[in-house]
Length: 170
Image 1: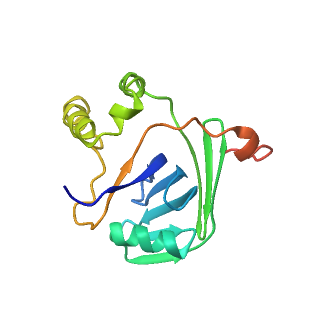
Image 2: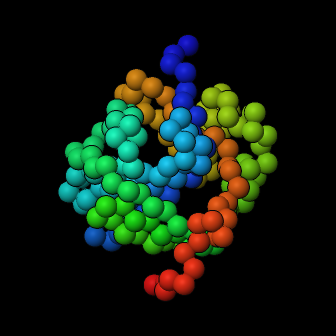
Image 3: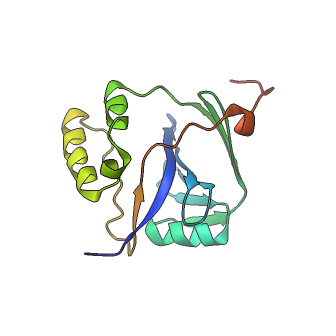
């Protein structure tokens, strides 16, 4: 049957620039390591850098995905409504999270016990690839020794706890 999945509940956000820089933020409310955030940064030349908050997280993520460089640095994510700010070592990033499209709202209606089953994820992925051509599919680290599953949608972070009030926005 394979290796049991480690469960990560949280958010993944990907952003890119016209110059070819790409960043993927994982913000995990629940994980085998407790709450944390990490960032993968890929330059236009393909160099991939992992910014992780602890050596333990860095080791786990680097064993799951390939990186040219791994740095252990504080990773701070602040949320104020749709605005997210990330500070991680050399990276400072601000972006706006858009609302969910109709398909996303529909998928949120799927009960958690169903939504977290591997068979459901595989079936939903087949449909999503047809409905959203060119869009992302389910995460799959096929060359990994462990399998990770992102489950559910925890409630959004509260601005009172994570807010960046008083900062100017671009």
